[in-house]
Amino acid sequence: MFVDSHAHLEMPQFEEDLPEVLERAREAGVEAVLSCGTNLSSSKRVLEIADKFQGVFAAVGIHPHDARECTKDGLAALRRMASHPKVVAVGEMGLDFYRNLCAPEVQIQAFRSQIRLARDLGKPIVVHDRDAHGLVLRILEEEKAQEVKGVLHCFSGDSAMARRCLEMGMHLSIPGSVTFRNATMLRNVLLHLPVGRLLLETDSPFLAPMPFRGKRNEPSYIKYTAEKVARTLKRSLEEVALCTRKNAAELFGLDLQRP
Image (cartoon, rainbow, N blue to C red):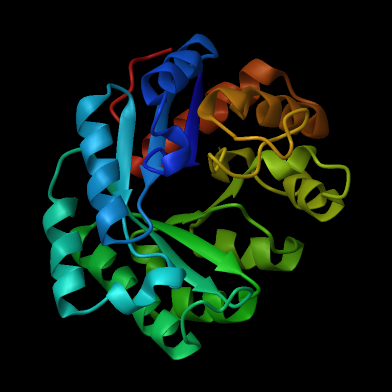
């Protein structure tokens, strides 16, 4: 029984067959999916999807690529959306200095503002970090993210960064890239990660695991990530599934049936 802790079900890649995608996920043992907004319009859409489909929950937020939307009015809109009972987190927020589609200072302000919003709402955060490890850590510490906790999604840092995240009470989420041949550092981090802070994600429609690399990812493929994590940790697939399910349920306050 899996929880996909990060997907983007609102994206155009799922426009034609979302009900079938979710049915395949259920058949693969996926009990819940957290679909994460990346701007105001997509946050509205993930909320509509969560409202329509059982087992789908929403995170509303503004990705660093769209950080210009994080105005006073934008934050007010997020606050309104976050009042819905199926909104369980604020995000996807953070920094992306790889593509730099938005000025760094605008990204930083949007990141800080959304952490403050999450603290005010008492909801965990979903953090995007690409080529900005040190500054992401500093902002999390300065903005007291430990008060609400959250997850570094698609974790791409090293073991030292992982330790600092754990010290702040954060979870680390492992995507399908852990199955890639060149993901040695991620698998090494995984070996030193307490299972109580581990989450699994697909980041659908991106980062499909082997043997689907390069194709559209979807929540049903999370079992391939879970199998690689189980082999790496020398644990059973059932243990990994149940532990990560429990972690996601507790972090996001998901209303799941007992396994």
